[in-house]
Length: 131
Image (cartoon, rainbow, N blue to C red; front, side, top):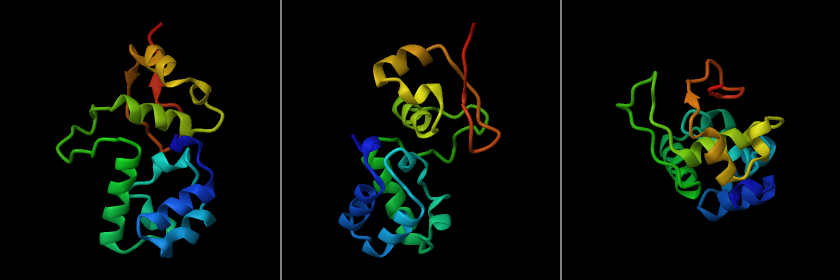
């Protein structure tokens, strides 16, 4: 499971998909399997990947690796569609979150009635549970 990869396994994957020049960027930014969910076309330039075609291809390969759907540009900003696997991987990526210790089946059970609201920042828990 990719969420268990350490930074060197992620760096090797970057090299294996044809981008050895970015291996050091991923290591220096400490991108491990849990942080890989946060890697997208917006965050890649901050990691040091600035060539547009490379950003586009790496972001696509990350989505493929994690089995995530591509974000649709026509999605409503206030109520975007959410893929349950994407929600699970995102929740696990926040160290210290109580959700990061849940198994996928338990996560699905726990969040099936959750109200998703877009985060106001890029950090924090994104679920509010009905009581």
